[in-house]
Amino acid sequence: MKFGKVDHPETIDFTLPQDHIDTEKVLSTTTSAPLQVYVGCAKWNKQDLKNFYPRGTKDELGYYSSQFNCIELNATFYRLFPKEQYEKWYDKTPEGFKFFPKITNNISHLKRLIDAEQYIPEYLDHTLALKEKLGTIFLQMHNNFQPKNFDRVDNFINHWPSHVPIALEFRHTDWFNDPQVAERLYHTLEEHNMANVLVDTAGRRDIMHMRLTNNEAFIRFVGANHESDYTRLDDWIVRLQKWIAQGLKNIHFFIHQNVEVESPLLTAYFIKKLNSELSLDLKIPQTLSQNNTNTPTLF
Image 1 (cartoon, rainbow, N blue to C red):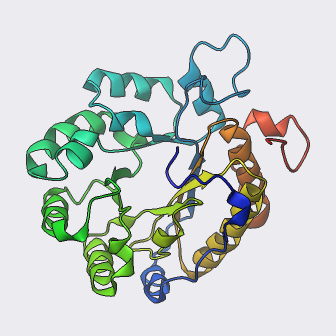
Image 2: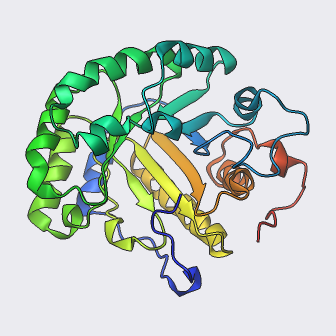
Image 3: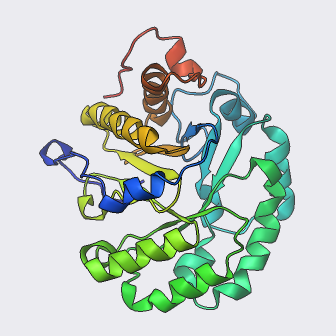
């Protein structure tokens, strides 16, 4: 994942911004539902996830899903897979596993949300084949998609079925540096119970809004292939602890790297720390549990 990649990550201030004032208000309306935590990578193919699969592994998704409880399904961005493919993915994965698919780029990047109501039904007809293993779908807009097209966002949101969880990701800085635009976006998402994606990447600190719009923290973390990746993850655990104390019930955390070298090890480090700090019992992927060390060597 090259988004926000920098040549010298050691020069970046990775301090997480303070929460938006309305994040606590959103979380204060919580229910008594149990805390749900899903942590995973963005891909499962062997070529990207180096030193993760045992030698001879043929069913990559089958093995991946035995180690992690979810996947951020980026493959669905590039084309609309046949419904049968979603059914095969469903059958290959264990009970409790969840997919968090990205909406096809035909809707987000090629059509740029124009006439979205014509394409949403077909997309959902295929994606809903994942049944109870479908997590939150997410829409990622192009870097140059600007607030002047807010009417398209409204149209998309108004045609999205309320029973299907969705998170939206905006990358143009004007969605966040213009207070009127930002507040309109936040309140629109909040009104429709849609999540506001948080992207933590080195070169785009301008889009770290720290504004939750429902009871879901959907976080896309991009490691810089630098030792600072670990302290950044530690900082996220502190922030998640704070949000849980305020009422957060759903954590969906996906770990990328600018160069996908050993993302499973970085993810396993995070899971181990989450278990320790939040008293969870998430499975620690085999890559780390066999090491008997707190910090795997990636660099």
